[in-house]
Structures are given as C-alpha cells and as structure tokens.
Amino acid sequence: METTLTINQISRRSGVASSALRYYEERGLIVSERAGSGHRRFPRHVLRRLAFITFAQKLGMKLDEIKVELDKLPTGHVPTGDDWTALSEKWTARVDEQIAQLQRLRDGLSDCIGCGCLSLRSCKMLNAGDALGQRGPGPRGWVEDLANDAGTSA
Ligand code: FES
Image (cartoon, rainbow, N blue to C red; front, top):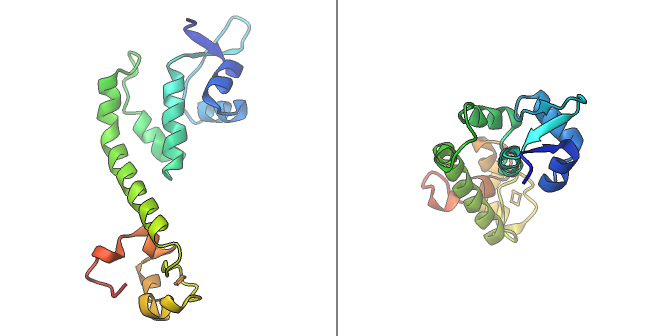
C-alpha cells in the first residue's frame, strides 16, 4: 500500500475536491510533502483528518474551530486511536447535541418551531408575539430543548 498519495488520489478517496484540499493545506489543516517534481504528495493518514474535517463541518464547526481541534493531535507520529479518543470529548458532546436537534426537527416539523414567522395557529400559543426571539436567532424550538425548559411556556 502506498504511503503517500497524489492530490488526485486523495481527492478521489476522500470525496473532497482538489481545490478544497489546497485550501485546507493553506489553512494548515492538512500537510503535504513535495515530490521531486514539485507536486504535492499526501501521507495516507491525511484521509482520516479529511474525514474529521468533513464531518465536523456537517456538525456546524467552522474551519478555525476544526483547526484548533486538529492542532491538538501530536505531530511527531501518525495519530493513534488514543490520540483521536482524546480529541473526541468535545466531538461527542457536539454529536449528541446534533442528534437532539435533529430529533426536535423530526418531531416538530408540523408545529411551531419558534422561528419568528408567526404563521401557524400554534404560534399564538407557543411563541406569542415572538417571545422566543428574545432567546436568540433561528428556530428556537429546534435549536434548544424548550420542552424541558421551565422558563418558557413553549
Ligand atoms: S412556526 Fe415560526 S414562529 Fe411559529
């Protein structure tokens, strides 16, 4: 098995466009070596970093945030399972919150979601006068667990 891959091979295997790979490298999220020809060669373990980047973005993490997390990985060796476990504490909490948000989205699709539109009959009861807008932007019924919050009537 090759230990280094070209940018096209990395792109094909990861599903990440070559332009994005170059951008991630510019931002310091991944590192390549230069072959004698001057072309980029990526160590195969970069694929795991790319998987982390892709899914962290799906969880709403910004690249700066992802970089902070990836910078916690050791640089002297290929990250081990223990290294990734140490990194995953914040990740686990984020995944749990994302799951909870998706469940609220699934369960509340036909009801008032506290987005400020006041367009459904249930908005009058659950978000009268857009009171939930005081709590922050976005659909508060999806963003937070209003059912377990004694501070609101929703
Ligand atoms: S659905 Fe938008 S405020 Fe109720």
